Image 1 (cartoon, chains in turn orange, brown):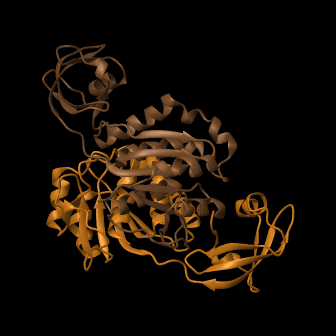
Image 2 (tube, one colour):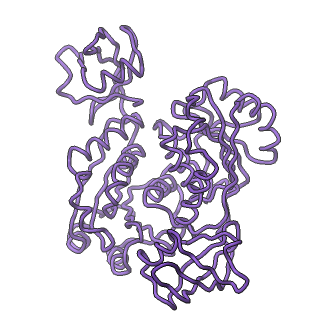
Image 3 (cartoon, chains in turn orange, cyan):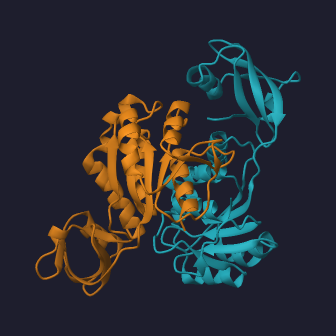
Length: 236
Length: 236
């Protein structure tokens, strides 16, 4: 945790914050902080701040929240991703928040096993936890917007055109289109398939919606590495 | 597995290969291949090839190895990395091979816990296994060279100057030097610290050895994401 996040309602009327959960444990046992020490704080979907420890004991810590400043800017990037294998979800969602991606849309695809949609990893509480982990690593406060579409065809035909209007539209797929461009730094919607890739039908649906193919060369990357590599190349 | 790797000694005098281990299981139960079907193969540190199934039964598969071609080129990148936490080693070593990094040098650093050096994750057999996983994902055959230096000061003072001669020398560290450059595509030695970063003394040692600082902006990334992001930005 490079930043400790709190919700707006946790702050009292005197700009003070009292913590007794795992955030307190982190301040006490990892930072080993004493009264007068400062801690980097951030209000979820709000500002970053400095927390000065007023008191810390066996049960809780009280902090005075001062010197607010804005969080780092988000990347103008919306990623459309086929639902990953449940054991990869934590890492991928965490990385999405860590890298500063603005929005994540999880969709179905032919190669997504139906059972993945039953995974507790995509419960609202778990998703929020993974995203907060990533924000606390990266020193950011703003949660990426996350949504789920369980049916591919209604998504690409009915939702996609509205969603990606006025953005650059890219689909990453092996041997498709051009090599991934560098530092385009403009509002972008980027579609990434599941392990094994989108089917030709699915790729065609994106191309019909105005997407351009991009590829990463001869190496086939795991989805979590593809997400990170594409984001790193497209934005600077 | 997008490519099934075998050792040179496994090939008989008639360009045939017989497999009965987990590679056979993969061909039988994941690919569900039949005689006449083809499988992508690669000889470790050798060529890629097409394997045509001659016979497959309850115990083994026999393949005829044909149509060799060279593997994808490696990146001219040597990464010097502080020994990661053991639970991260598999993923990081796997990604190093997957991304096409030529060489990995693992070093000590003040923030590396001594116990990490006792981890079975860095046994020769485990390291080779992680690297082969990455190669089989990326469709590559050539193992990155991996070495370990358990003492920081002798490494940076005695070994580093010889190792990195004639390469671009970069150290990634928050708030240091310039933003990570894009697509430098030249022989490069890149140093990356542990979680929590190199100490100021350690950074100074690299700078004294001719390294230039680069950073990734205000976001602090996990080591595994920093490795992937830096590699993606520096090479195209």
